[in-house]
Structure formats: C-alpha cells, structure tokens
Image: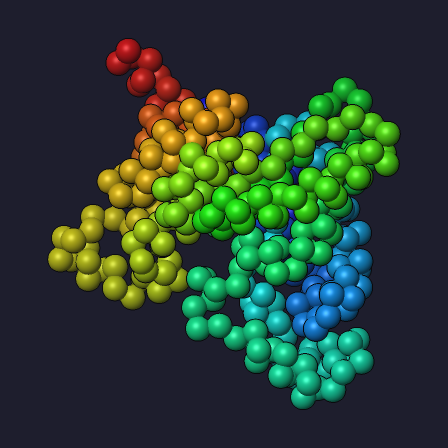
Length: 345
Ligand code: PEP
Ligand code: MG
C-alpha cells in the first residue's frame, strides 16, 4: 500500500517527501490562492460576470498555478501526484473587509455597490451542497481549461528537465455524482491537455479520475469506472453526505451521542465501516470489473487514522493519502495491517 499524502503547496510536498510519502494523493488547488497577490486575481475570477472577464482573471492565475505545480513535481521526483480541480464553494474566497471590496471594485472597474451585489448573489443556504466541485467546471468550463493548462504545462516542463523521470499527471474531478458530469468535464480536460501535449512535441501520458464522495457516485460506480482512470474516496464528504450531517456542525451534538452510546467515536476521524465502508466496498466491487486498470485510494482525513487504514487495506485499496505529519503513522499502520493479513492467510 504505497502510502501518499495530502499536500496543497510546494512546501507541503517537500515536507511530505521528507516524512516518507510515496506520492501525493490529494493536492487541493484552491489552497494555493490564499497568498499575497494571488487572492486578488482569484477574487476577480469569482466576481466576474462574463466569460471574458473570467478568462481575463484566469490568465492572471495560470502562471501561479503552473509555477506551484512545477515545484510540486520537482519535489516529488517523478512519484505520482493527484491534482484536484477547484472544489470549494466560491463564496469562501470573497472579500468581507471594506478595503478589499474597494480594491476589487477598482480592479474590475465597477462600483462598490455593484461588487457587493455580486457577493450577495454568491450566498448559498447550504454551501457544502451547493455550487462547488465539478459543478463549477460545468458552469464555467474555462476554469477547467486553465487548470488543465497549468497541470500539463508544468508536467511538460519538468519532464523535459528530467528525462529520467516518467511523469504521469493525475487530474482529479471532485464531487461527481453522475457519469455525465464526469464525461462533460473530462471532454474539456482531454481537449485542452491533448492540444498542449501536441504543441510541446513530447509524449506525455496523463490520467483523468474522480473522487467518490457523493453516495450516488458509489452507487453508480460501474458507470463512473468506465470513464475514470482512478477513484479516490473523499471520505470526509462521503461521511457527511452518508450520515446527513455536516462535519463543521457535528461537534455540537456528537458528545451527546457518545454519552447516549449511539456512536462510539467521531465518524469524521475513524471511518464508519458499517455504512460508509459498505458504500466504499460497493463502489470497488462495481468499479473494478468494468475497468481492471482502475487504481483506487483514499484522500479523506481517515487516510491518517490507523484503524481506518487497516480497514482500507482489507478493502484492497492501492494507497491512502493524509496530511504530511501523519504519513509516518499511516505507513506504519499500513505495514502492520499487511503483516497481519499475511499471517492470517
Ligand atoms: C473529502 O471529501 O474527503 C476530501 C478529501 O475533500 P475535502 O477537501 O472536501 O475534505
Ligand atoms: Mg470533498
């Protein structure tokens, strides 16, 4: 089980490698945008009202993303890196401070009131179940175009600099619940990637896969496997959507549930084998026969929890991914589980 890790920035990637990671199972691209200067361009993208405005902002973002991906590929020295396309609800990034709103208004050539109106329009009642994940790429395919260019251009550059490595970029589409969503976004990714590779003159293979984090994706995994090169279980979202409570709000009532002996432990920390685990098993059993080459991992927080890692090993997963500092524990748990399984054979 070639334990990977979650790394969102070049610094995370270097740390992960230092701690023994054998790849990156989840690079959350949105986390690259919090830095000085970057957030401005990102906010322009979010508050764009036309495709032209959005593309203009995306042009500014592209070099940042590409540069980060190059550094991540360099740090990982040819090991697998799974890059997840933009996932969170966009309102998480909009400015709340008056001076930031002013700055954005100036950059967009719009009035402050107009920008405030746009921000209000981004409000959602249930953001976690709202306009996020692949839904962003369906509504704004230009985001997927930019992210594909950044991944593929970075991989081409690093591959040319290191002919001894074999880079195979893994592009991961989040929050898919319906095969047609994946097909739709994948078409944009493939067209863009193939054009970049053709122009570069080198032969670069790449993969397009998806997260399994919506129960419907697990239930229809046979269909989804026909279009996916890999599955990665997003057990954070899969847990919250299976239980029907949010990971951000569950803290308010979970203690009462432990006291009442309804739950023994936090399902966001230790995977719920009975329910969430059953969905995972179903997805694996449905997906693998359709696509025998499908590789399958876990990238939710559970990837760093020893008892969950043992369970994932029994399910036959190829790797787990977790935060850099949990890599040593996850590797130890995976090794112990492999020994236990060999002993009982
Ligand atoms: C998940 O849902 O398990 C996941 C890894 O994604 P997020 O960034 O939503 O936690
Ligand atoms: Mg998720």
